[in-house]
Structure formats: structure tokens, C-alpha cells
Length: 52
Image (tube, rainbow, N blue to C red; front, side):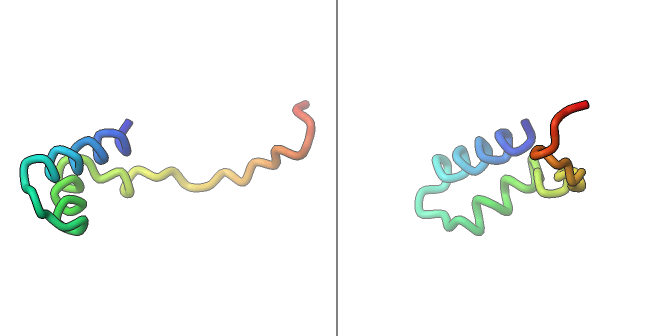
């Protein structure tokens, strides 16, 4: 959900600021929804092994 909120914020920034750069839109979106801070640590599941 956080990533989707971030992308929506970027989209709205582009709409409201014609000619904005990606860096500007990304920074503004991070103020509202910084998805990168919420990335979980890897769990290293092995999906090649059968479930027990």
C-alpha cells in the first residue's frame, strides 16, 4: 500500500507541477509516503523445497 500511495503522490505532483523532474516528484512523494523505509528484510525462503 505504501508504494502505491507513493506512486499516486508522484502522479499528483506531476499533474500539479507541469514540467517537474522525476527527482522533484520523487522527493515530494517521499515526504508523504516513503516506501523505501518500509521494505522488510529478506527472509530467504526456498520455494524450490516442498512445503512440510
